[in-house]
Image (tube, rainbow, N blue to C red; front, top):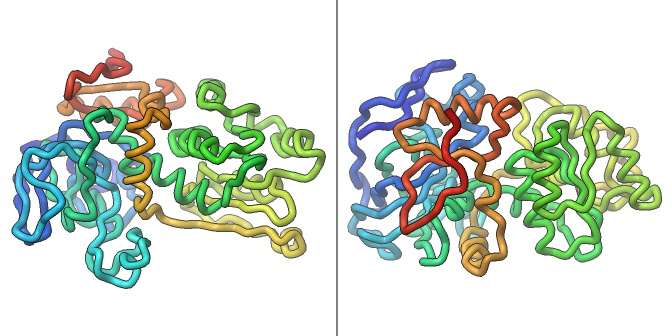
Length: 358
């Protein structure tokens, strides 16, 4: 088969790689129909994730058809169309029993495209298939479903749930990339008074507005003041950090009201200053976290009911074999306007939102 193989920092290729098989009784092999690219994949290619060894197939989000299962797999069978979760769970360790799959001690957690071969290939081996694969409702298209592998669960669990969004809240989302936009969409499920989106790209702010943000503001134009003006000087009840740089994290801590929540979702590569000299008296709660994807069944139900604007985030679609071109478009999002790039042929009579630009 072919897969997108990490060969070391700055080097990768769509090339021949060994076909996977079910090595363990709990494994399944999935033929990949639809896959997407994550910002984490770009970090890997830059060498920012040293745990990824050269020769590893990248990717941790996919939808496809089960073609093989181990003898101890009971929830799926060959022929099933499934969502491949970005997080793998053994189901037996302390953390899995608590539903904290991202911290799995039994060989799971974030392993696809990280510690084992991932989903950006024609086939993928999925360990612990019973908890790591989700059968798709017939009404959920593959393009909708693939965004439930990582983007929407991350925004929902690490941003909205950790931030404890409640009815009537003012929610500020700093960063209107795919994660931030998914945070805008899922925060609205809790009937906040308003959602404010902050970014520097006009196209992303417009996308946030279309997804329901009542106010948008350029990050270079005093967003803290806008939040203060809209809340009578109080500050936002919940601020979601969806960028991952020190400046935006510190901005979030200036936006939040006393007693409010800052939910950090962004992946930080550098230290950020925690201004305890200002924060200690404000009763502010700051949370971080890796997604667990324990919300995937709920999100699948909501997608089936038409309650999640998942495919609205997809701006570019490519055939699977054009993986390198897709990476080039995604890596230059400021130029191309890319939000989510999806690869695969339209399955199940699906109409994809956009064809790849020349």
